[in-house]
Length: 113
Image (cartoon, rainbow, N blue to C red; front, side, top):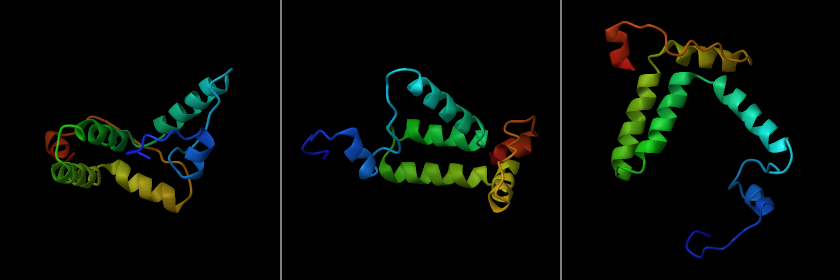
């Protein structure tokens, strides 16, 4: 698809996993879907989301090998944050996470993040 520049319909993109959802762009459905997605993202661990966004931004300016190292380091550092334990507990107990995000932390704690 990438090399031949073939156009595919949204239904086919959904079927093959290229997109996760199809949302009509007419009416209020699109705005409602965007609002729901924003609420879902807001309920996630803020530090993890920040690191994911950093990974996406940096992907364009590093080699693949360098990027894997940077991504792995960020992932490991997230494990030191209390939200990592909360994510695991929430998953095991099948409940929503109660994430603390960026609270005031000591300098030595921030060094781990």
